[in-house]
Amino acid sequence: MAEAELRTLRSLLERLAASLDHKDTIECKHFFSGAAAYANGRIFMTLTTVGLALKLPKDSRELLIGKGAKPLRYFPKGPLKEGLGGSSESACR
Image 1 (cartoon, rainbow, N blue to C red):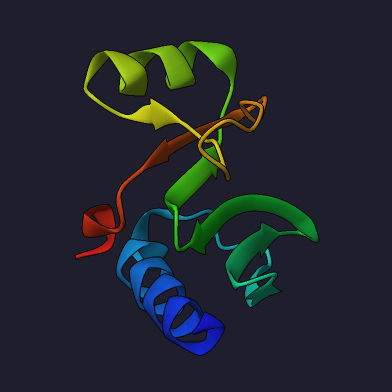
Image 2 (image 1 turned 180 degrees about the horizontal axis):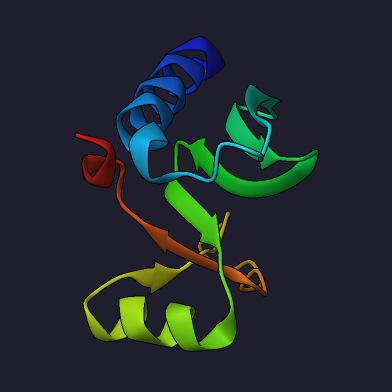
């Protein structure tokens, strides 16, 4: 299962590469049951069965939540993950 998320996340990053700062090193790795993207060794995005999640500053999270994104929650009654605004996998298409 994680292999599909890894391929999808790599594809998304390739499409976004033109707008990234080329001095940053971006890499994708397996992440539990999904994939994670790292910039200079620090995680900034994950794609798992619960959806796409981005590590964002508070004002950016609030903007995306205002547009329909939902805070990341790995389990239905689990805690919200601080610093991550999540959306569905359809964001990768």
